[in-house]
Image (cartoon, helix red, strand yellow):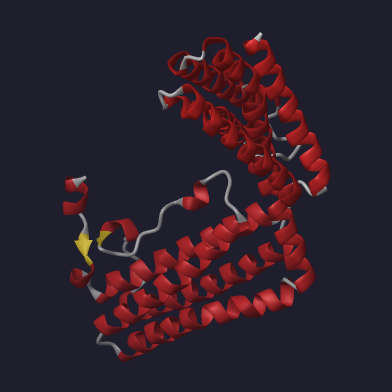
Length: 325
């Protein structure tokens, strides 16, 4: 890491020619990034893809103006210098290489790109003594400052209220399919299916340590099982439910959480105190599941309560009766 930093040039040490070369390569990179955003969004968000197409065209215009200025002052050969060659130069995480980026994340990254590009041109303009070059860099700084407004204009032209609403709805639907649905299934399974073994053990032994061990084993085992099952049974390509890794993680973690919620109270040595707290936790878990179903799955609240709370109560009763008997 230190050798890489040592090999970088400081921005203050760059010549005017190198500053122009850096600006040219940065504009090329930005145009490519905007086009990759557009390509990624075109199928699901065509209106937003058009916005990024327009932004990429503007970056191409900046690059051509910079090349013409370099040609006029320094000739045809442009030095190879990029962001990573300059110490302290603004860097971006290569988030555009990620397989799954939300619409909001992409829009936020574009705004950050515009702000940092403006700051670069302001500093670059201060470094040059050539009047024409200074004017060009100052104009580009102003253009980047207006770029956000330009993006808003493109949005107004291409991303109407109906289109934005449709895209936001699509993004919300993808969030529900990838995270909420498998997470909710896991929470339901972890909260309800572990009720019987945990409370059967509790009432059969009245030993908090044994009950805790059974609860931990049931919760963690169920989490691993649900996680692998969710990830393996659907790769998301045809169903459009998103990354199997994300869905498996959501399902597995929430399954374990659902079971651990009413297992961990048995860390308390006193059996009846631990059991009373575990019962309260179960009540909270079941109502939380009903709320999530109503909020994200559009299940009528009273139907969700009937399905989850009544079902959970029956499983709890079965465990308590089996353990008590």
